[in-house]
Image (tube, rainbow over all chains, first blue to last red; front, side, top):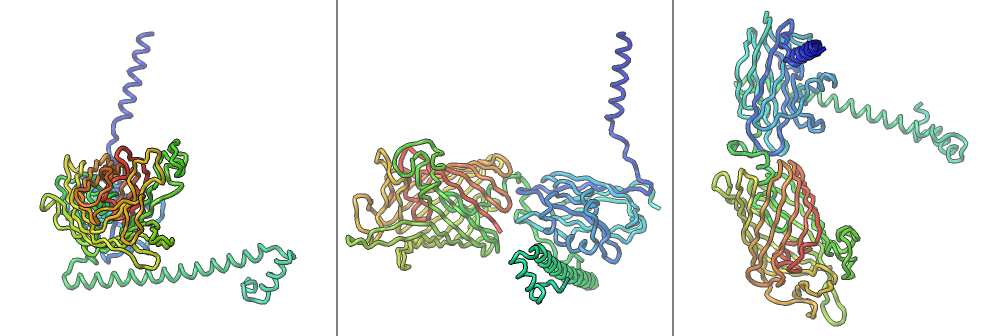
Length: 174
Length: 377
């Protein structure tokens, strides 16, 4: 009985351990691009940040990530609002890429597939735009990262609220 | 359906019929709704067309900028006011430094350039323990902490001319004064018209220091009145990782004022109203020097990014004073990027610049409840 109980406990513990282990990140079939944002130190309310993709013709493609849950202030991200106005993005899709604001001096992470029906980053000709704004504070909208064919990622710095973005590219890039 | 639109003959017939109860009035309501819907759809379509044109124009301009070798960043970045000062910044630093008006005296901060600032202040003239001016003591919530009667209301509007220079005007309700024995009286209100300049910045010179000046005009019914020439300066500095902020300075009013706080007091140990020029002397009015020179002191403590506790005092050092010690206030406030909400207790119900620096109403009490709501926009 004691041996049975011990075996049962060990089985349960092993199962819990396996379950608790962080799963290996799955690389999408077509590869993925991971973003790591570092925020500058600041004070007052945290800034709103949005990243989106534009093609070679500077046409809006897709919102990649939005760091703010304050819906009534999204319109203050004026460049992104104007750019995306014609795209009529699905609200549910936008909510899926929306997360809370990043705290001052903090970091934020997200990843996107290299290929979707809307874009193919492996072919190049894109640029990633970053806009950040704080109420009664600064408004930064000129930060952008070109994505050409064969893009392998890197570190990109700016003078705005997002001081650095580190991009890693994984998986099939053909 | 259009035949049913207001203005048509059929609509008039139906309206009459609805009045007589011959047809359901809901038929008319449906027509009005349809018309409103049509108008909204039309406006929506027009606005969408304008937006499309604006987008196309933005793209054209970007291409022109890029073709000329410029950075395709449209209008460029607007730097944060605290850019370059990241080292040592705390989450509460910004909210601790930005208030242009404390409860009792002006702060060192100025209103940001081209921003408006509004503040609504509401202070009870009754002690929270008084029973509706009867002088009797009762439980504090009998007259809602003194707010159900005899309140002093201040409405302030300010504007940032530059990043370091602002102006503001504040109106506070005053009182009535008897001018002669025939009963001729005049009621006046306080109008503060002031301007402030931010001379020193803590991050550059070690302290925040601002100077300000202006007038308080005690406007009577016929727009005649008395004028106080005011001046002052406020010095502020942060300590303990910006969690504590100290304020002090100098305040001067050439014609100071003071108005009694409680209508009556069982111990009769309260400050009397200051007699104003042209006012009939009375044993219930105090006289003395016209001017007052005072030293303000303030202490703020940041509990979180938004929540603060504060205490303030103004100590008369020359000229007229109530003889009942300094003007005092303490309380808490919640500060966001766009609003500030404060709850506090004072030992005075005065609110104008030239009346707050003359002292409290009684030495051993701070029981006038007040609140203020400020907005930056």
